[in-house]
Length: 309
Image (tube, helix red, strand yellow):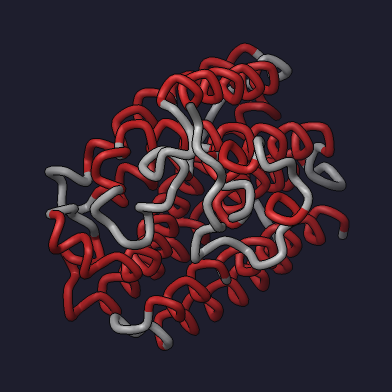
């Protein structure tokens, strides 16, 4: 028998509609999908939109394909939820030992394992329906990501940089927008993918600072623990690689000055994050992590404007 819903988790967005208006019986499932923490699907979505914009720039189109961008939005919400559900199923025992995660729906008993598995299948089917709207090459490219997604939850048990595997999965959209537009890949989207991976490793290292003490006790490995006192230098390296690879992708695709201007603003924002990293400030780390949505949207807006002009 499922228990009543617990209060929202500490890193949930205050006043989110899922907490205010959703029926009590649905709230644990929405929490399992992290609906009340939309930053996750934003960060999954943004490389997709960058890729769609990069394809439009390369093709000389006036804007990124609106249908593709809409499908990527639906797919990002569904697949981020599915990924979180899968992660929580795998980590349900570990989550009971970490302060920030022990109130998640599975470890706290709000949802049964059978209910979580059924919810995982439902979200996966939504993602599949979205993927099937694209061309055959894009569909195959999307399916190719599943192996990395399945591997990620296990990496933190023995690999000191599980954020690299997370990056391989979370940055996959950098390939998808181009694949959906052209039915193939080339150097530009691959460079965009490499830059997006470095971005994910950087921002998720900041995110992992929230759990660094609990992770040390439980034995969970993370890039934040790996970098230790040099975490600022580690994130700086990741963000520098991000900008270098994105600049190379823009050059390869024939992007204009507006896109490079947006990349400059993006780089300044990443530098601002680095300057404000504090290993002892978990709340500050969460704010810096969340700010990557605005950085990514700034870059996408610049690329879209570049298409228009």
